[in-house]
Image 1: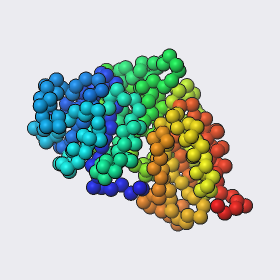
Image 2: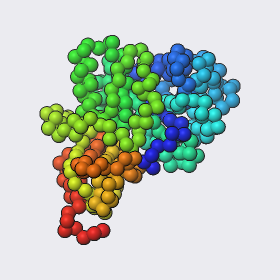
Image 3: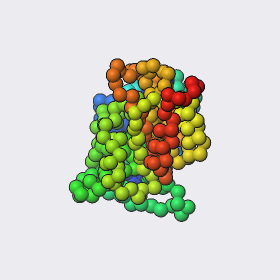
Image 4: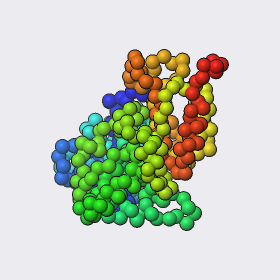
Amino acid sequence: MAEENPDLTPITVITGFLGAGKTTLVNYILKEQNEWKICVLENEFGEVAIDDGLVAESMDAPEDLITMDNGCVCCSVRGDLVRTLGQLASRRKDFDAVLLETTGLADPAPIVYTIQTNPKMSDNYRIDSIICLADCKHLGAHLDEVKPDGSVNEALHQVAFADKILLNKVDLVSAEEKKQLEKRLRTINKSATVIETEKSRAPLEKILGLNSFNMESILSYDPGFFDEEQEKKIHNLELVQSVGIKFEGSLHAQYFNMFMMDLLRERAADLYRTKGLLSFHGQGDTKFVFQGVHEQINFGPAQKPWKEGETRENKFVFIGKNLDRQELTKSLMECLHKEDDKKA
């Protein structure tokens, strides 16, 4: 599972609030750019139709499919994503990528789970990345929204799940406002790449076909990502936050499995994204990686082993609600193999 099949068609899942610029982005992809051939899947429970004219045409088109002048395709999903993707499978190689618009759905976990576990889907497609399209002018207010029951609001959900955040309408705020917003986004989701755009004209090469939703993505993180001292300087009042942990040594496989089982059983709903790079005692030079969405975890050997002389440093990323760094660090370090451990 660690190696990604290059033959699979990449699916980019895009979330975003009403007014964030999603419709403009999709229309830009469908009508203006000519470098990429993209199949845009628009769900019917989202905010608005991509384009009134397009949707009117689609009512009579076979499978609600419309082919654009630039080779892109627009398709409406009415309830059954698996059926729609199944119908597209035979011609999926006509496209560079599939863009799945899920506005109105704060938690993309069901879509990720379906594509990874349904054989019809996993034989043809893979999740490439999860993108949050954010309105620079209004995102702060959305993040501040307080739910009556104290639960996490949709904006926090969307930022927490994202691999990339498209910060749109940056021309409508001051440099200081933008700086403060980016600082806040880093607190919530330190691992997401923030890309600035105006009028939703996103550089597609920075958001499509990059395989940022793979188990190996943690390997490319900046070393400073795990700098605890830097995190301590930020007084974090966010309900959702990201925690990076690292320490040297090799883990005891049984202890680590028990820790993860307990954590996911008790906290799966609060854990939006998890990633890890691991060294296990008794596994030679094999480097292991994992990544998960809620309780769905993909785990396996990394493509490259530990190098001779390389420090065996375990790295973990947790993005979620009410995370306790000290508790997580203590529990993980208790999973380290000690010489007096009986062999499992």
